[in-house]
Every structure is written in structure tokens, then in C-alpha cells.
Image (cartoon, rainbow, N blue to C red; front, top):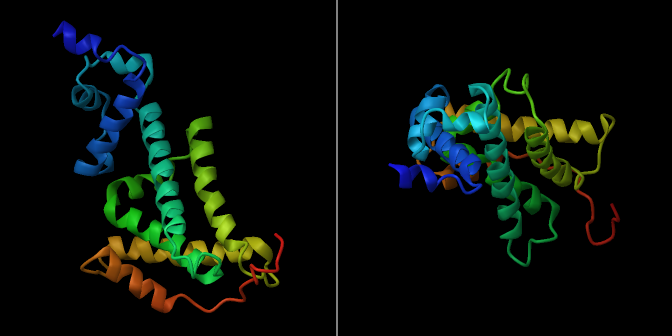
Amino acid sequence: MTQTKNSHHHGNLRSALIDAGVDLIREGGPNALSIRKTAARAGVSHAAPAHHFAKLEDLKIAVVARGFGEFTKAMEEEISNLAPDTVNDPRSIILAACKGYISFAQQNPSLYELMFSSGVFAHTSEELEEASSAAYGVLAQISSLVIPGPSGPRGIEALIWSLVHGFASLSLANKIGFDSDELAFRQFESIFPDLPYRNTSTDQR
């Protein structure tokens, strides 16, 4: 028993607790998270998390921040995996990010629900602000590939975000169910509107 406890006192306890919290949410939904269950999953005493998380809300915020980090990575990886002939095509870049968005939601429904639940930012932290800002940064990046109309750049961001977030959320709610992530994305791709894209070969943003 002593060996188990000592194995977690090497500077990685916080990360191990967050990993455990993410697993609990993935398995049991947003309400499955608790300090005691997280400690048990991480293999430490129920008092050990207090060294990093004074209360459950602090752990939840850290878990959400981790979720946003994985969310950002999912979008960025889809962009980086674009074929050479589409790597400079604005529509392809935007749709790649949207594919990462939809895939993350499909593969992590409970974590996605918690990340975008009302009130989760009521007790924010620098860690969460940085993680969520990075995710929004991807949205801003792909939105800048569209020539803005009267509503300006924020209008384009709102349009794209509303489309992809609404589609992902409706899909998870079984309002528009699909047999696979790929089928879901193909449907999204087919309904994504034509937009006034910038010429990336000449535009200097």
C-alpha cells in the first residue's frame, strides 16, 4: 500500500487525477465526477487530491481545460492531415477543422457536454481560459479565410461556429443520427454553405 501511494508523489499526481477525472466522465457522464472516485481511479487516498484541488469545482475546471486541449488538437490534426492539393484551399481547411470538431464531439459526448454546459466558466481559471482561448483561436483562424460581410469577422466566426456546434450537438442528441463519424461529417460537408473565400495564394492576412 505504501508503494502505491509513493508512486504518485513524483510531481505527476495532478495530471493523473485529471486523467482519472476525464475517464470517469467518459464512462459515466458529467455527473460521475467526484473527488473520492477520482482518487480511487488514480490509486491514491481520498485526501491526496486536496494537494491540487481544494474542491470538486477545481477538479472539474481542470478536467474541462484538458478537454479543450484535446478538442483543439483534434481540429489542428485534421488541418495538418489535409492532402497536398487542398492544403491551401480555404473551404478544405475550414471543413477539416469542422471535421475535428464533430469527431471530438462524437467520440467524447460526455466531456463535450460538460465543456459547453452553462455555468462551467462561472469558476474559471487561467488554465481554462488559455485552453478555451486556444480552441477559439482555431475558429478565428479558419474564419479569417472568409471575406467578411457587413457583420465583420465576428459575424463569420458566429456563422461557422453556430453551424458546426449546432450540427454536433443535434447529432449527439440523436436528432440527426449517423452510423459513423465519417457519415456525420459527409452530411455536414454537403450542407455547408458556399462562402466568399479569400484567395490564399495572394491574400496576406
